[in-house]
Length: 264
Image 1 (cartoon, rainbow, N blue to C red):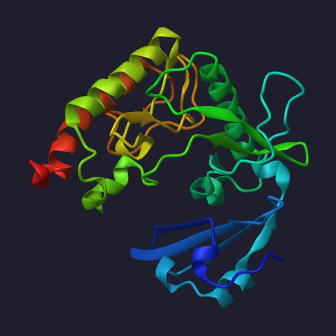
Image 2 (cartoon, one colour):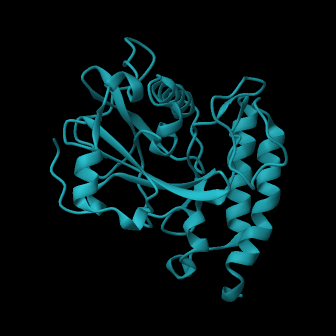
């Protein structure tokens, strides 16, 4: 079992509310991955995230089968990243969704789909789309997607909580222009992102925006395994379409105005 000394050693902590017989019941899930990319997951009913202790975590964690979260690395079609990924960001399992799909291979299939999308985009790069450096491989499976890192580690969605961290970097016109260029590029090669929202936008050192998170990016007209962020789409959808990107961009300008109003 992996050694844990404090809750912040976890790679994921998620809290949600379940309504039961009119009562609002908190649930908290958590996960950790060791140096060999073995994964462990736990969940506690009637517990908030800030109530987790090391003892509770250790008692709750259970090993996760590789096949549930890590797809087999195919013989052709994908690039293996160098063993040394220092200086790069490794995107891992979507732990926030694991409780809903555990016991299936959904998350493994979702990771493989995103790897294929990133491989396609790497051959058609755009300056406002995150750079991809291949798949991290362990036990002949994809354990993560290796991407560029950013000086400011937080996505733009974090600005709603800590706008001071983004001081001097936010230029509304530059952000909208850069993202529109990224979206137009995607549409020109037959793709739609389907999840434009502040949490999927990073800022470079000079404030240039980069679009991230391509888990919902698919050829226009394809059925989606995952789609959209509540509050950032007009209606629930299940097909990839350019209109979803247009709507997200439409909401982004007013959101920037509201979030950074004090900087004006």
